[in-house]
Length: 100
Image (cartoon, rainbow, N blue to C red; front, side, top):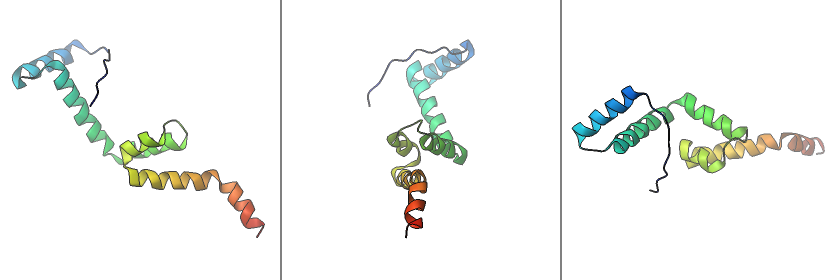
């Protein structure tokens, strides 16, 4: 897995807690924060409301298909993409059916 340096501010209290956790677990601060963030993301990604919000972002064109697939899984993402294609072509399909 590649890494990327990011800079952000944290409350001093969290830094202190992370440093204590790092000391106790014999890890460094970055490892503790990465593990905590991973755990949080796994937790939130399992919530239905979060998954629905991600689908909405895709339907609104705010995120790409691959990002959608990462969050909800490829099979579900394919179903969403197929539905979006039908929705996007709704008027065209209606016109075609009207011509029959």
